[in-house]
Every structure is written in C-alpha cells, then in structure tokens.
Amino acid sequence: MNAVVYQGPHEVAVEEVDEPEIEHPNDVVIDITTTCICGSDLHMYEGRTDAEPGIVFGHENMGIVTEVGEAVSTLEEGDRIVLPFNVACGFCRNCENGKTGFCTNVNPGFAGGAYGYVAMGPYRGGQAEQLRVPYADFNALKLPEGDEHEDSFSLLADIFPTGWHGTRLANLEPGESIAIYGAGPVGTMAAYSAKLQGASDIYIVDRVPSRLDLAEEHCDAHPINFEENDPVEQIKDAHGGGVDKGVDAVGYQAIDSDKEADDDYDPARENPAIVLNNLIQTVRPTGQLGIVGLYVPSDPGAPDEMAAEGRLGIDFGKLFEKGQKLGTGQCDVKQYNRRLRDMIIEGRADPSFYVSHRESLGDAPEMYERFDNREEGVTKVLLEP
Ligand SMILES: NC(=O)c1ccc[n+]([C@@H]2O[C@H](COP(=O)([O-])OP(=O)(O)OC[C@H]3O[C@@H](n4cnc5c(N)ncnc54)[C@H](O)[C@@H]3O)[C@@H](O)[C@H]2O)c1
Ligand SMILES: [Zn+2]
Ligand SMILES: [Zn+2]
Picture 1 (spheres, helix red, strand yellow):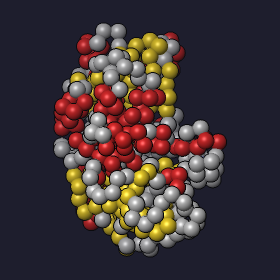
Picture 2 (cartoon, protein in one colour):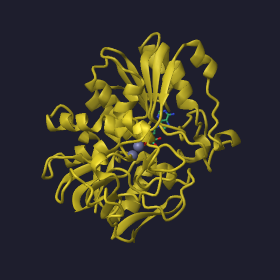
Picture 3 (spheres, helix red, strand yellow):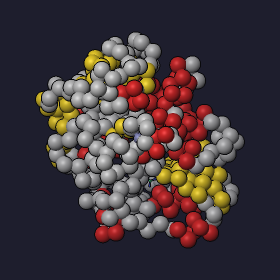
C-alpha cells in the first residue's frame, strides 16, 4: 500500500510499504478514509526533532474497520471510527485517571504514545491506505454510518479536542476573557471552544491574515497581528488589566517579530520562549495559562545552545509575582472526543470551517510544502487515500 514517508528535512514521499496486519488479538485494521496533516508533523518535517527518515507520518486518522482481532469485543468489520492521536492502553494508572496522553504501557520508558510520531512508540502513522489500531476497543470512537460530517469528525483525532484542552488547562469559565496565541488549526479550535464554552472577549494572535479572518468570522475572536504591533500592548489596550485566561497554541517554533531574516520562516526569527512570556504579560494576576503548543527536550535546529536542550528563558519571576497557574502537555483526546462528536451530530458544533483542502494521498508532498509555508488559505489539509 502507499504511505507518506519522511525522507529528511523538508521532504516526504509517497512510497509503497507493507500492509498492516493484526499483531495482537486486541488490534483492528482500518481502511483510512481521511487522515490530516498537522502542525505537529511540521516540526518533524522541518528537521526540528530527532525523527529519522523512514517514519510513516499521520496521527489524525479515521476510517472503516476491515479486520478484527479475536479479542476485540465492541468493533466489527464495516464500523466507521476515528482514533485519538494518542495510543493508550486503558488500564494503566494514567489511563484510569483519564490521562490517556500519558499512558505508561504503550511506549516503554515514556509516558505517552501516538501514531507516526518520533519518540511516541512503534506505531506506524495513518497517512497511508491502511492503519493498525492497537487496544482497539479502548482507542476507537464509533461514528454514525455513511460519510456525513467526514471533515468535522476527522478533526476529532486531534485539533478540536486539543483546542478544547487548551481552554480546559486554562480553566476557562463562562463570561471570562481569553487570549489565544496562534491561529493555526489548534489555536482556532481553542478560540472556537472558548466561544462554545461561553467566553466573553476572545483575542487571537497570529500574522497570517486568512487564519485570523477565519477565527474572527467563526469564533467571534478579535484578530491581533503580532507583526504589526506588540500583541501584548494591542490586547492590553483593548482589555485594561489583562485577560482572565490564555492559551499557547504556537509552541517552541514561535516567531519573534523583533528578529529579522530574509525569509519569514528562517529559524533565525524564532524565539522559543516568546509566546510563554507574552502570555505571562497578557493574562491578569491570578489568571491561568493552557500550554498546548509543543515544547521539546531536544531541538536539533534551535536558535541557541540552551534551547537545543529544551531549556527556555521564561519570565518565571513575573509568573510567580502574578500568582499565575499553568497547565501543559499532550491532549488526552479521549476525555473530550465523545462529547465533541455528539455536539457535531446534534449540530451544536461544526469545526469543519477550518478545513481548506481535501486532497489525494499522492498530493502529500506538495501539500506538506504549502502548509509548512503557511500559505494564505492553506489552513487544514485532509488527505484521502
Ligand atoms: N498538546 C497537544 O496535544 C498538541 C496537539 C496538536 C498540536 N500541538 C502543537 O500545537 C501547535 C500548533 O499546532 P497547529 O497545527 O495549529 O500548527 P501551525 O504551525 O499551523 O500553527 C501555529 C500558528 O502560530 C503562528 N505563530 C507563530 N509565531 C507566533 C507568535 N509569536 N505569536 C502568535 N502566533 C504565532 C503561526 O503563524 C501559525 O499560524 C504546534 O506546536 C503543535 O505541535 C499540540
Ligand atoms: Zn495533530
Ligand atoms: Zn495506559
């Protein structure tokens, strides 16, 4: 079968790989119907992780069950399912507590597993024609038959729950104000989640106009362009003492508008602590920050030696002085995906407004490049084998 295989920095290819098989009685195999490219894939794509060539990408997967292991009890051939990007066992201490992003059984020596991601275990990605799903009873979320809501349901694998998670890590309450850094897929889903949860003022910060426009139109968010003016000042001008809550949906490859380079995406323009420090300034004393943007313990392309080891210059004194709390980490997708699915089915949520492209798997190399360039209008790319 065909799959998207990492070749090295800025290069993926669609190559023939072995078809997946049932390896354990708890597995199922699915035919992929939709698999998405994620901002998280771009860290690997750009060579900014320890990912080695040969890895099959794809952690946002949905499809139809074609083979069922003999110990699987709740799924059968023909079922339409979406998988959390996390691979989880369901019975370790963290899974029991709902922290499925930190499962201690699926990736020995590490808390957390995922499909097609460096350091996240031996699970092949789903940017392919088929996918093996381990611990299938636990990991699969069943969907209504047919192909209705295919775009929205595909976003249940990661970005809709992860955006929601950002607001939960920040403990957003109805009527509170919130600032979200990043209007990519995750940040816009955080803004959409904030709207669904009854936030008052929602600010969203980015520099890509088409992304800010979508967040303004669909999430009623105030767009803030950080290349035009200091985003902290812009938000504080509009919102006196700072907002109640904040979300980081950018991560360690954040751009610093004070740094110059010929290419807008030159790593020389990055400052891995800037969004954290902006948030500490933007959020009011005793406010809370939800950090879902990715931070890594090792970055081969880091702007300085400390950042190469994941050590950042964070204004911790200011955070302490303001008595702020923060929450971090991978989203525990299973905590939210069932309820978000039901909101989609009932017509209360329709996150598909952020999907800009549905392309064939063979177009992955071109679409990776365009999404990586944050080309105007290329907001979320779905692939169809
Ligand atoms: N915690 C999780 O479970 C989880 C899940 C999915 C993605 N992520 C991470 O979330 C982050 C966002 O993912 P995405 O898919 O939306 O990716 P993305 O890269 O498309 O979006 C990031 C956006 O941030 C903007 N940006 C860059 N510098 C900025 C700055 N200084 N201030 C404000 N905005 C800035 C970019 O223009 C871009 O639009 C990535 O780091 C990704 O790895 C985490
Ligand atoms: Zn993702
Ligand atoms: Zn577990």
